[in-house]
Image 1: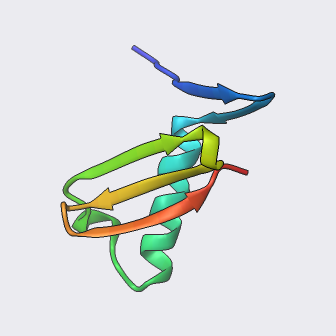
Image 2: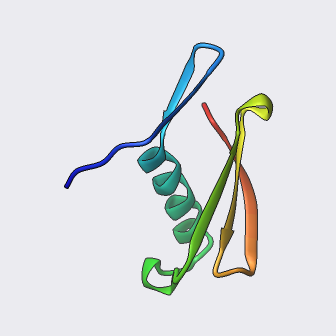
Length: 66
């Protein structure tokens, strides 16, 4: 089954896969390996035009929804 999740707010749209890929890119840029991500949570806050992420219940950060 193929799935897609989109968040739309005030004329903007972002897909869940895009957010996951952005977090992975940041993770790799910091010298980590994808295989080391055991758990990834992403909290989308459209009113802030941001998404917050938590990796392995330890590492957290923020990404823009642009």
